[in-house]
Image (cartoon, rainbow, N blue to C red; front, side):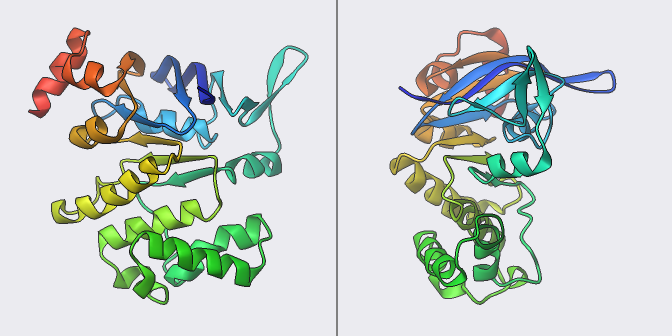
Length: 253
């Protein structure tokens, strides 16, 4: 197996609140890693640290062996320039919980924005790619619509197409279904299942335990900023070894 993401000794505090406390984990290339845990446990902070939206206080992240957001200089980690960090982020797709679609741009314009601006992809080439991706997520008939004209599930699928447009090595999902009405959850999970079947490397912060059991290759349970337990879904979600994991899962039944 090839390691896609390696997190070692990740520490992040806000004032006296230590949100990440010496977090270690790896995500394998071509697999889906699900991160679960109670609210406030550090899941989203960990996800944002992977592409350096949240710089760590100590520890480090590598993606495909490359340090993210920092470089090693004379035995110490030093912050990279903003331009270098943006270059790294262009290889890492991120589907935000709040979607962050541009309301003044059409669906196709939202999808082509990053490839055209950050990767200098010719506009017509980017549009052709965007149309293919929007077809893939079931939105071929919505390319000229605006976000306000779409349902929540459709907006989430646009956000997924936008992340895929950069042809990333890795896609990060932050609670991709948390803001959706229950009847819209299935359409988004179907898209993620299809990506998983195609071997896309993904890390998904989710509260959908059934989805994690079905799709994930590896599950990480975090509580109070620490990794409590991790392993295959059949172990962590069906036969957890740690009392805290059993307690958390028991409350969800």
